[in-house]
Image 1: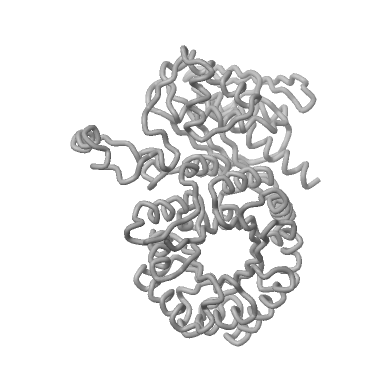
Image 2: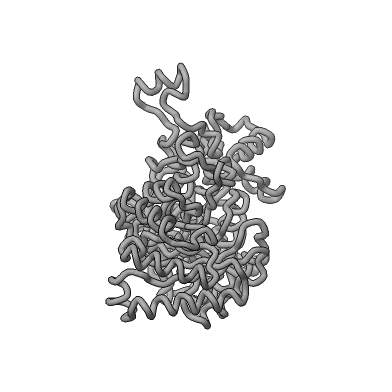
Length: 506
């Protein structure tokens, strides 16, 4: 079987999604999980855009050894030099050069001719070859470019030393048949195409990113650029999990394979969702909460008789346990650790003890503990690992006749106890004002959302917030059976991220 290279750009294009923000350590944590997942290439960032992105790429290049580590750069010689300095310590570094190829971009944005674009592309690729022979070139907005010019440009950059040529549907404009013809035309009419891998990078503006990517590999593309959960600019990118499982599930049709350990898909999806603050919609293919749930009587009857009647994938193949094991207050350490392992978590002894303690606390409030409850517990513990301020105690009084009041106790950076109280327009407002009196970091709350992790009156409630300080957005998440406590945890989580970022740049 032929092999498709999986190029993951969650840490670059994925993080460019509006409202998405990852700090250096969060990017490193996702990169470690992507290595476990088995992706071939990790596009670690766009290092010339900020010192933080440069540092994240540098750390990932130093630690992650199996995948190729890639950096995106403008078609600019100095940008290439600076990008190389970020990725040079990788075991297999790649420089990814991008420049627009459509007449629309050339006329309205770049103010350059086709001849000028070709020269810039060739010069930059040739310059990058001084550092490595692992060079990728992207003809941005290729799906709206003249097909004859794309062939001309691709030939020129391959002659200059590009070993991967990427054909992006940058604005999600292409239809699958049209995009497939473009790829087929390039492979047929570029005489030196055998010297490079043909790649595709599709956006989801019309909901066709995965369809276009699959049609492209059917026509001969052998690298697909994608993101976990399909996150990215505007409507997002092609979803890694959907492409991988389509190729695996329909191996009879594609006759292709990937190097992905599919049992790590669900774990990776949850990690990216937790760290970026972007929830996975319930009906999301492969990793959504309803992807392997059945409610129709007809479907349930079929599932009882034979699961293949209504499931084309085994949930275990993507890391979701096939059976529902209910845990409760009588469950011990072994059962809890076993369930964590089935869900894809490998915690050290210290983190396991914290999670188990939280689990036992939850069993006093909730009769049955579901997989989603466990995932929320682990995520909550991981969010507190690098805390500067820790929420120790909270008490709220409110009602339709009284004035909402909150008293808060925090544990500060040096372990000191800090207490204060405040009035507010509601209980959450009062809590946030009390915390602000203690932490004293100017910020503006820009988003506040609440959702239930599971069903029932005793469900864990998860709060996601975003705050803004000096033009930078920070995401915070918190979970608890008490929604006011969840709100306080989320706010502290966001403030800790803000403070960590300020300390790093100070």
